[in-house]
Image 1 (cartoon, rainbow, N blue to C red):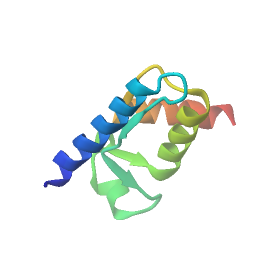
Image 2 (image 1 turned 30 degrees about the vertical axis):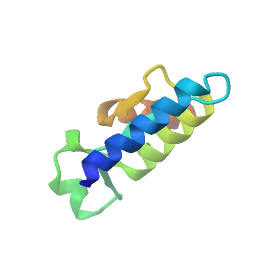
Image 3 (image 1 turned 90 degrees about the vertical axis):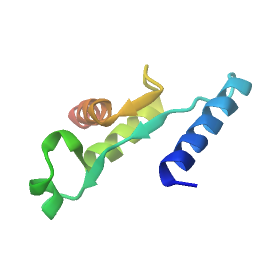
Image 4 (image 1 turned 60 degrees about the vertical axis):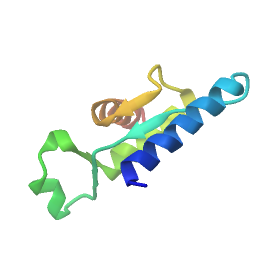
Length: 90
């Protein structure tokens, strides 16, 4: 099974689990494109729209886990927005 197909299957299993356990479970799906470390080659070779700094992704994931997010699936742009907002609150 390909990685993309397997990822989609796991995401669907989490969504199905949430549907069966609405009172106790909320699923969020993060889809970052390319996670980069500060100063790494990728941070200057990969277009900005395709990358997300590891610290921004971390802030986004913690923020979503603690307070939730309106969107169930967060793409790179949504993760950047949430992560930057969370970092600005610190």
